[in-house]
Length: 335
Ligand SMILES: NC(=O)c1ccc[n+]([C@@H]2O[C@H](COP(=O)([O-])OP(=O)(O)OC[C@H]3O[C@@H](n4cnc5c(N)ncnc54)[C@H](OP(=O)(O)O)[C@@H]3O)[C@@H](O)[C@H]2O)c1
Image 1 (cartoon, rainbow, N blue to C red):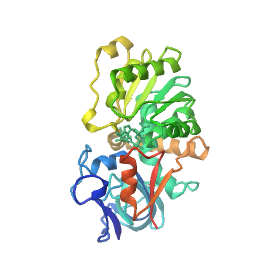
Image 2 (image 1 turned 90 degrees about the vertical axis):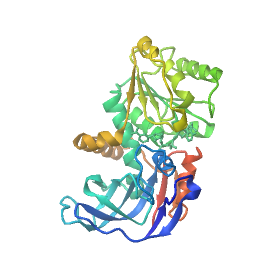
Image 3 (image 1 turned 180 degrees about the vertical axis):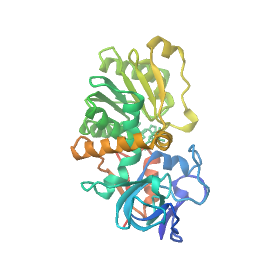
Image 4 (image 1 turned 135 degrees about the horizontal axis):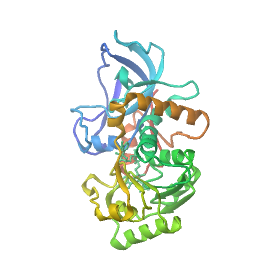
């Protein structure tokens, strides 16, 4: 089969599309003939050896994918050959075939296509868990989303609106801001790119306060980190919840917060690790997915991908994310 391979750690330029041996079926697994895979920031980190979970080399990037089951292992009871499924597999998605453990699988609802199914797990799974189980966001509360035109950012705008929040989006260019507004954000503003100076941090904090009538956002959703984090925590509302999602600004720039801010604001800094929670609480995660399916059917969320790449060009799909060029969800379509 054809697959994108990470043979040595490094940037997307080190990745190669190669013909490799087909996967071999195992008792608890299925083989999926893939139709679409989606790219997430963890793929960018994993190929550089910077992610918290690191597969042995060589590996196939791609943490989520969708397709049709062509073979099943002898102990697989809930799925059969011909079923349309999607899998949150951590790796292996950017290939023609995927060997996936049955616990990673979910049936694709009748009203959903392969691209949407491939784009749903990581971004919407993370953001629903973050807003519902971690922030316990309430209708009428204000939600600030950083990196808001990215994969998890756009999912959070849509879910925040569906949950009755007022959503303020922040991103680095006017084009990205326009995408946030088109996806339902109530307000949106541009922040500077790069490492923010003290002055720029103060301006960011003041801008957030100004947009929230001086009160600050009740919930901050932060997939960026770096020098953006502290000014946003400084602007948070009394008893606010600051959601730590990720560090797209750089693993070498993980923010360190002055704890007096949590005392002064009566606020919480809340860690979010959807993959770990989903593994520990599969029933709650399944209930969240059923909620996502309903939100999709009723038109309240729209996971339509924005950028599509072929399997032959799939290294460019990862470079697109790494270079801060993605505007929404990046998909690899597989013939
Ligand atoms: N905690 C969890 O369970 C969980 C689950 C999934 C993802 N994540 C994390 O969430 C973060 C975002 O993932 P994603 O898939 O949404 O990525 P994405 O689509 O690339 O979005 C990330 C956004 O971060 C901003 N950004 C700021 N500095 C950047 C830089 N130096 N390089 C690239 N982007 C930069 C960009 O927006 P602007 O240009 O507008 O600033 C970009 O749109 C990652 O750190 C990922 O590991 C965490």
